Image 1: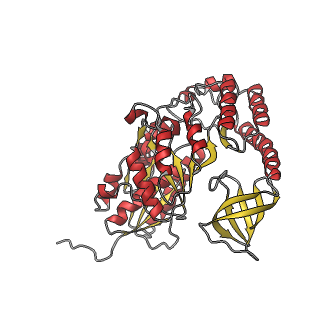
Image 2: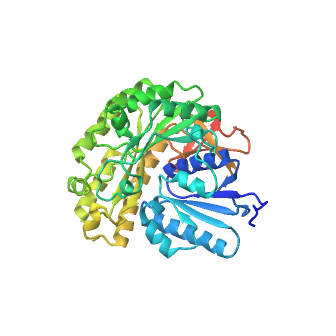
Image 3: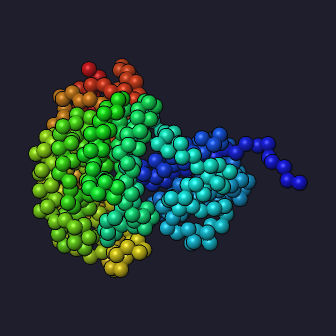
Length: 436
């Protein structure tokens, strides 16, 4: 007769990829914890007997990292270091059949919407009463708030809809409740994320309702900063700028991925916008929200991108002088429309083009930061590292944007608190100052 083991399970969740994946992991951890199972996030203790890898499948580098991480824990399992290995997330959603053949050491693979099935493997129930609750895996003074899932756009290069499905919004009431729960935990800054932020509400309210959601979130006590990420530029709802202008809690910051600027490339990418329309949108943003900082991302090396089209992008970046810029190199993704094109820009050229954009932006960022010397800025401090306390202004998101450094030798700030900082010197991506 089989008897139950007296050894309690302990789960270690590993998260790869973007902030949306991090939210998924935190929701999973909340459910596991709610079933009285011990769980950690990316623990280095090596004392868990079950590992769950939450994968990313966005581009080649992300897929490679996910596969290598799965293989790493498969080796640990073969060596007896863990008993069970489960894989979830985007890579698993997209390549489940292939992965089952390639890495059979994994006990089970799950897609992006199969949390209840994953929990069942742990002999745990999916508790609906925990929806809206969340155990934070990192700092407790800021958190990501995912307002919708999936995407209805048809960008040529993007496989996200294949892994996340069609756009599905959460209700305003559910998001306000989640924000209230986060505020009770000490969260002061929430970052709104989605595959496509401006599409919010179209599915459930039959119209775009991001401004209404923002007004509701601004009523949540304890939340001091609200930050907007991943806003699609085509047919941008201009009333979002009105909400930003009237609500002091909304950071003067907008992450709006443009991807390219050459009209031929934008058409090839299926972006549904022209360079002229992009310029007009940025102009309106700056008129409606004085002092707004724009973060954008560009994609280089898309099939068919010529030197002339790339130069058009370079000229655009130099002219527009964006506050924050990120660059991706094109990845040839199966089942996207761009995959039917010839991947005719070689890897070396993709790297060179990405580096060229960042060289232009480095100079712009240096100029922008030098203007801030002598100004006093409100800073939220995230961590202490070496001899510095490190924080951010309202114009900067964690991990991807500029940082403010304050010497820890003769000054003290509490992590998770705001402080006014006089900027004394600047580098291309860092500001140095003292608390005043």
